Length: 184
Length: 371
Image 1: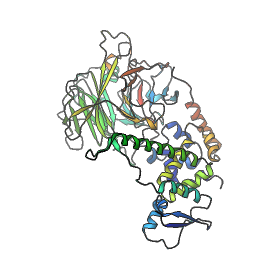
Image 2: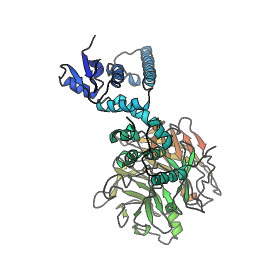
Image 3: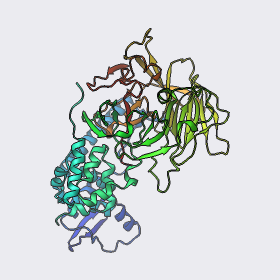
């Protein structure tokens, strides 16, 4: 079953094609589609042609499968329907394979530098793609956890804009905090 | 585009800080650049979070430095904290301690920021039947437990939203106050013998020694306890706690080994049980699993964290400290501390090499916060 094609125009005037089902992964696009403004091309002035294919790749992966993952929670609530036990197991297995595959896909998909991460996070926010926003925010958080301020700045290509006095004050706080060891 | 991350919209920086679950990470986030710092210090993102708990260690007599053990990264942080020196403390998941000293003054204290708010002093409690105690005795035993409903800084304006409820005096009655009040208000017609309390879903609940639970009506002109639920049947144990787990009231029962004499601090806890209050029938049902949570009990508002957010902690475990203050004077409290695993009912004793013994304020759990 082929779905309607939609055309998206990036900030630098390049046009990309996407299936309607995939586009619906974005709340913003979904609202435009449901609003019936589908005559032609949807302009996205906040998303460049560098990042739009990456966004489309995510939507293709996630747009079609909304609600299609059949979860047989707690062995099936509806006992009247005869669900064979081995069918349950098979379904569970398939679900697990699907989740594992998705995780692997996300891992590869998210393998890029901080500049792409920045653009992708903004695009996900602008297009209201919650899953993609969660992924990008989580990746940014993981580049902060357990790191020193210097390491964080390096990870995100940020220069400190504190005055030397403020820097010193913060170093003092860190010294006070930075104490080792405990158990075992 | 150079320096773009420092100009990330505040909303998105807020999303990122929301995923930092240890206060160490949040502080380091704020030391990166000015715009990140301004987001870090916005309390709307932080004040309602429960950051990775720390174990507040005992004081050393010689200085005003207090150690806080972070189990998640196995570090001890030494904070300059003269405000806690010589004071008995109770922990909370909101970043604040309740403290009482031999000056009989009672405070709310944030050990990380050293912010301090005065509460009415001990002599402002009503219905004091046996006032002939020394200040030291009052510090050590007057308050059985003190619980706060939220951080006093979590809302704007005054601190009137922060209510502190305490079990106090020889009769173990209930009284509450707020920062800025002139006295503690005892609940009217309060039966004696309360042993624990908790704030849950907008109300304080308190537990009597025989197991009945009351809900504290503190908004009427005559604040009073109202019977809420009876005790789980057939369980007579020395120590019980109330806790809010995912919005539902639970009771934790802690069983001790019978020890004839208490000449030195030692491990006494042998088992825990947990009951859930079924909301419709108000009957207790035993639960056998904490799922992905870890629970913290002792001289603190009992609270739980989701372990997936806080690496380093074990799921389905109870982290307990020594809160049996009656025995603190027999060689000091703090020895009865460890990790109870619900899966196999084993206890891993605490092997901290730091000094954990105190005769008035042994280690306690606190979830640190900047607000």
